[in-house]
Image 1 (cartoon, one colour):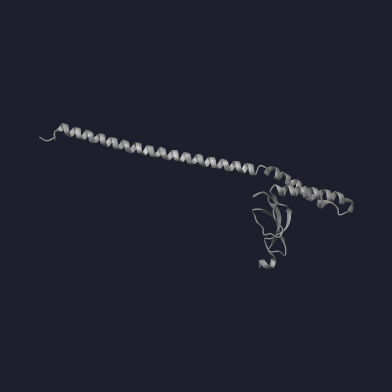
Image 2 (cartoon, rainbow, N blue to C red):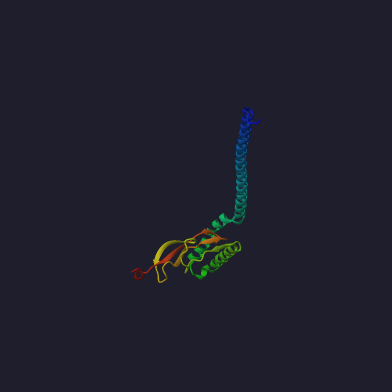
Length: 177
């Protein structure tokens, strides 16, 4: 006698159905597990990126905390330069001139000690990252060379506080033809 009776066939079919259902459930649960693992890894990576970004922002805030103050002090340096330019060459103003020059030297020394440097301009080629061309003027200098400075440019460490306002040599009429 064989086990090919209808009851055994139903029992085998039922076991196969249960196995197929169990396999499908295992595949579904494995997919869910993988998706959750991926989600957890992404969240951990995002948290790490946020931590690094905050550390970098904090370091920048500490390093460049005086930027606003430095930018405000530039007008003081400009006013000292204007005061010296406006004083007559008369000997009667020699004491005043000496006092303003000494104060200006002290201010520039403080700037240097704290990483505030003047942007080089006259005689340099125009660099749009640190110079702002205000006018083009005819000159014997090579085209694109800075020939005069209207306002000094300044940098604080590696950041530009203010671009230098400059006049640039333009190509001569003979060179354009």
